[in-house]
Image (cartoon, rainbow, N blue to C red):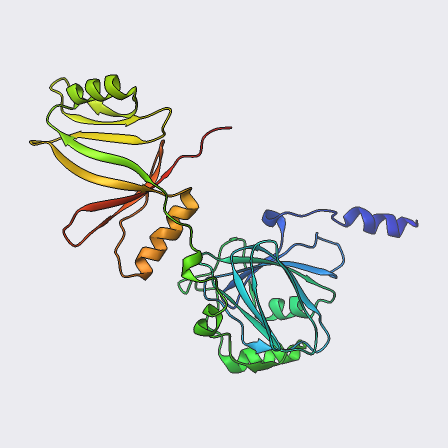
Length: 309
């Protein structure tokens, strides 16, 4: 190795992370180049974050075989006459000469790790993108981010970099046809806990802990017996919530979700079904939210906290 070659090798990075990588706000997305500084531009490895509902115009690459590994989110991909649902871990290869597009169908952004044998798409990003040090999606309020490039400008630039636009983005209704049916959503589990209003929290706590071997996991009780406590059955896992009030009453019932992700999915599902769920709250013993039936009675969905391993 010559002195010049040794100098070049010393200046070349061998690793990179997101915080030290070049990044751009690009057509409403965040593009992060993962090639180390000084390393060859090809293969170009680009981490692309696309917001929910994001979909590029249908296009075709003249010579680039487009490929990506889906890291996060859910994406419906259309390539020619074939359509697939990509989920985290799916590797997608889109051959040159075949028109394609995709649409992010998850409620959270999708992260795609693009792996390209040439740098034509990277040049496209460098031309239309806005360099940024903020590793987040751009918003319309960001003055430096051009999130509303007109279609003519986009089409000209895309064609100049070997990817002419041939059609519109993937329609939301069209993409939705390839999603799992609603019936595939996780079922709710059994009743998780019951909440009661009692006249003397201290007296009721003593009675329930003695009768059913419950233990307190949360709460605060004043000297006069007012306050609230949360009691747990160590063997059964069910919860009894007691709070003080002028008269004894049934307060609400909670149904079990297997984990917090399922809880979030059900929160979104109820909103889609025109039921207005309350905000999700988190506590040491789990997470939950409340919806009210037509009589105003509370029905809570609850996900117990994960047990330490």
